[in-house]
Image (tube, rainbow, N blue to C red):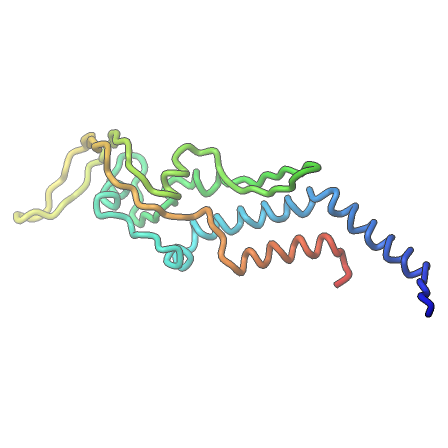
Length: 186
């Protein structure tokens, strides 16, 4: 009985493994691609009504619609959830960490109200200035003068989950990582 090992093929295998090991040792390029993909997904969740429906977002309450349509300086005739000023949408940033022990990709924001919007919770209250507006009355139309409205603390803010990816997007991320490690070979 005899076992023969082709040393040349082992050398080729070792070279192939060395190439993969070098790629795995520096995951920063692919982590940045993954984090950027995550930011794109979050922005789509905020911007696209169909995704919001899939995520189970509740519509804006009648009170919120009134405030957004009539507040002084920021009137919005067609208000949409989480698209008030664009600050949340535009604050999304990718971030990565690649060390000897771990490789991570993140996407997120440093805005303090983002968690409340994503997970829901209880509002803190405050005031909002309402601009003058026209309203229908039983005698016709009358003009309402500007005023400051107090909003009580404790009002429920529903979760509008936007920091989430769908299964097909996780698959796309896995493909990015696989393509990075294996390079052009498949």
